[in-house]
Length: 153
Image (cartoon, rainbow, N blue to C red):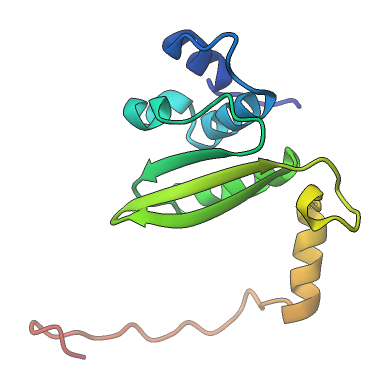
């Protein structure tokens, strides 16, 4: 993989003294989080310390804040980079403003075993476009909603 890489597994290993107890999945997820958040050190150290980095089956990380597809685009980076690395990502609510992000390693792009495959992003986009069709870039813009001082339309 070429391009810019941000601190991930190496930072976790050296700062949390985990040289021998981080699983291959833990390394993959730490590197993924590092790339998504432009350095894993931008995430809460207390949240990172709670991660069971040695788990070979799944990694669970609780994230405080929001994540979006545009503006900061961390959600888009998460989606694209996870698919590139054959990692299934599941996001659930953990508490107010907290998201639990679960990571599971997959091993194949295709196959009959849903629990072991992670299709490429191009395939996923094609499947979605086939189902919904393409959206025109010239779609009419909605009128902005006018709200008065009392919060009423």
